[in-house]
Image (cartoon, rainbow, N blue to C red):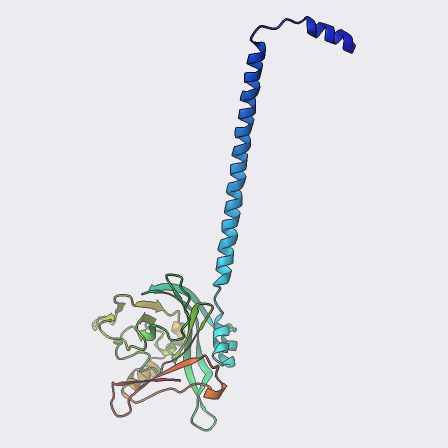
Amino acid sequence: MNREEYRVQVDAVSFSPDFQARTMARLQALAQEKEQKSMKKLNWRTGLLAAALAAAMTVTAAAAIALLRPQDVARHAGNEALAATFESKEAIAVNEEKTVGDYEVTLMGLVNGEGLSRVEGLPGGVVRDKTYAVLAYARTDGAPIEEDVPDLTVSPLVEGYAPWQLNAWTLGGGTCTFAENGILYYLFECDNVEPFADHTVYLAVYPGTHIPPSAELFGFDEATGDIEAKGDAALFVLPLDKAKADPEKAGALAEGWLQPQGVESPEPEEDLPADRTTVIFSEAPNAPGEVLITEK
């Protein structure tokens, strides 16, 4: 069939009077249906795009507040030997987080052992057997921390010993703090707590600046030796190797709280970063039980 014959036959077809109206209505319905399907696809793609943007923003935010590593904190404090130890297999990663008052506190990690610091004042210095812990503070409201003086106190506590008898003050505690990118970093040191590893050893964090543990902050059961935190105080359990427990040495350390003691900065002051704050806890030489606090 050629084009002319096809046209003749089409012209001969008779249509009903409402054919045109019905055809237009059908075409409009099909157009509307197609538009709705297109909109559904568009909304779905928009949802995927929003999800992708949200994920990207989350990753970006996480990267923005990425914490320094414990070895970085040690280097900032001017202790290369300690930094190297935090990079070794001897370091204990914890990365546990607790809310303490207005802060989210992360216990990042710790190391124990000899040769990590020296007490100046004697020829050649004296090597101390120490425990070091690195913590990071962030405000719960998201506001950046700019001051390097914390509103929290850190102290080791040991099950079986009253918190007001065995703590940072009686174990020769000291700190180095600095703020960076809205986070406060807290490097804590004290006499090695591994000899107490056959007990539960805590690192307590509680509100207040350089406040010794008290009955208002911690409960102590003399019968069982259990310690519990009160109010906003928090207790991190230190993952110590029980095989390293030394009851004889632990007893000597516990008795030492009756004697005057202190620890000086591990490095000469002129070699330390200018923004470093060092706090030294010690007992008053002529008044046992009274606490001296020295800041450098």
